[in-house]
Length: 128
Image (cartoon, rainbow, N blue to C red; front, side):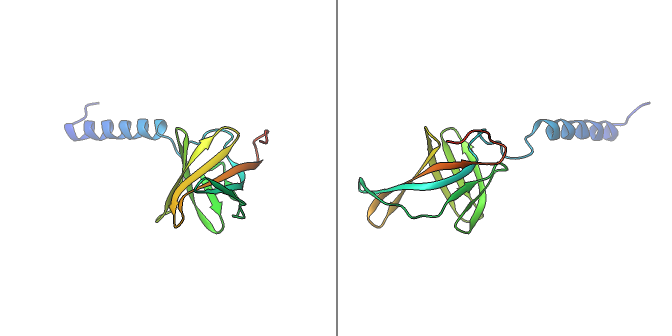
């Protein structure tokens, strides 16, 4: 059975598409065990620790998050977690002990908000 130039190109294109579909990740890969409920542990402004009353942060194992009505996706890149929706992005540093530290410039200077994991996501056996 002979293929013309157009037929051969179509077969090659379909083959490449199949390879990319199999090899490319279908969803955002997350670090195993990072999903769970995080509670705000402390807020530091100008180096002074203040009590934290922020809402819980939930990182779901499917790559989605929830924080006080804000929902979106999160991705893990090295030692950072980035929360994002269509308009806003926020980056936190992953620290030992399932801690996420958000740093940003506030009205009073540099602010650090530390969240600690209190409950793992369903399917994770370990709690921090």
